[in-house]
Every structure is written in C-alpha cells, then in structure tokens.
Length: 292
Ligand SMILES: Nc1ncnc2c1ncn2[C@@H]1O[C@H](COP(=O)(O)OP(=O)(O)OP(=O)(O)O)[C@@H](O)[C@H]1O
Ligand SMILES: [Mg+2]
Image (tube, rainbow, N blue to C red):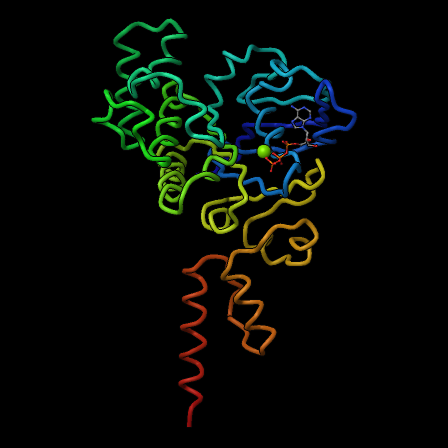
C-alpha cells in the first residue's frame, strides 16, 4: 500500500567518484513514498548502481568522492549516520548471488548481520527463523550457500538483508544472472514483501517485462540524469522516449505497436501479457460480431 508519507527524499544530489572527471549522478531530485515499489531503468552506465548506493549511504560514506545535496531515508540523513546504522534501514541485494554470500552455512549467512548488532542470542535466532521462513528457505539452515540454485542464493541474500529488519529493500540487477524461473522467484518474493509488510522496494533492472508487471512507478536514468518518471503504462506508451534511451518495451507492447501499424488497434495499450490477452479477446469478439 503506497502511503503519502515521503520515505526517501533525494534533494539536489550530484555525485562524482573520487577518481572520475564526470559526475555519475547529476542534479537528482526525487521522493519515494513508504510502501512504494519503484523500478529504475536505464542503459549501461546510466547511473543505476550509483543511485542504489546513495540510498544506503555506501556513497559517499564508504566510497568517498564528492557529493552535493542530501539523501534522507526514514528521517536519517545518509551523510550523518554510519553505513552500519543505515544497514538497519536499507537492505541491499546485488547482481552476483555468489559474490555476496561469504559463510559456509545458510544459518550463519543470515545470522551475520544481527550478530554484528550485538543482539542477544534469542533475538538473533528469532530473526534468522523469520527471515528464512519469509524467503521460503526454512529447512535449509545447515546447507552450504554454494549448493543452492541462483534463485535460492538471491533469496538467501534477501533473507540476510531482512534479518536486519530494514524498511527498504534495494536490489541492483539482482536477477540479471538468473534464469526466468529464478527471476520470477525473486520478483514474486519481493512483491510479497511489498504487499504483506509494506516494505518499500527499489529495483534497478534491465528487465522491462518485470518492471511493467510489478512497479508502481518507473524512473528512467539517462546519462546520469533522471529524465522521466511515471506509472508503467505512461512510461511504456512513450515509445519515442524509450527508443531515445535504448530501453526495450515489453514484448506485448511491441506486438501492440506492430498490430497498430497494420490497422489493428487494441482497446488499451498493453504492457503485461494479461492486458494483451484481454485486448486480443475483445478484438476477436468484436470481429466475430461483425461477421455477416
Ligand atoms: N567505482 C567507480 N569509479 C569511477 N567511476 C565509476 C565507478 N562506478 C561507476 N562509475 C561511473 O559512474 C557512471 C554511472 O555508473 P553506474 O555503474 O552507476 O551505471 P549503471 O547504470 O549501474 O550501469 P550498468 O548497467 O553497467 O550496471 C558511469 O559513468 C561509470 O563509469
Ligand atoms: Mg549497475
């Protein structure tokens, strides 16, 4: 449920990596509301990963460089609190599932963050139990993370983030190395976290189909700037803009454009398979009714 409560407020942010000549993000202004599911699209080197890292304070607190403006997350200014403190507000899941798992047992992986918060043992065990259950890995406690599938490894990485009880989950290309089944596993889990726990979700991805299906709002980064934002329907209908910034439309939207070029207009421009199916059914029904 999207509320009107601004949760992440990005004001006039420009950021340059310490060894870089150019800004990786320029004059960014954006507000994300509590419970929102936001997807960031943009071509290679547009600034998506940099955007993700300003949300948990890794930029600039850990990576240095020059940052202008401010990022407020849940009332905390990322530049005024430590990366460890921000980790309790913002959980982060990265592209390579194996690279972010570094212990030999699933249970240790999930316990690692809470242990570093010096919580008592019962609280740590309760968090681990809850996080593994939420991601569907209860019963996997003693398994080695390397024995899991890619989708399971990403669910484990999400469990490790959840054990810190964050209010925001940020996924940076977290499904780019997964097959279609692993991708759906992760997106479905994230959708459940969003709906059931009202967790705010920010996902950087190249996958237009998933963005269309899951996002409340899509942001488009292009050459380090935020150039468009809107609900998926609005964004994907703007085919000119998408072409300009090299972002593919969902396949069903391309099909609709093709049909339109051949004088077959669907009642509503589809961005998901379900919408396309309904539209085509209506079209068929209409043509049957017109038959002599
Ligand atoms: N560690 C770094 N040091 C210097 N410059 C960097 C660093 N990381 C990224 N950049 C630069 O910042 C800009 C934005 O890069 P970023 O990695 O955020 O883009 P991206 O949209 O995530 O790209 P990709 O789709 O390849 O993941 C690029 O110009 C890139 O060269
Ligand atoms: Mg990236």
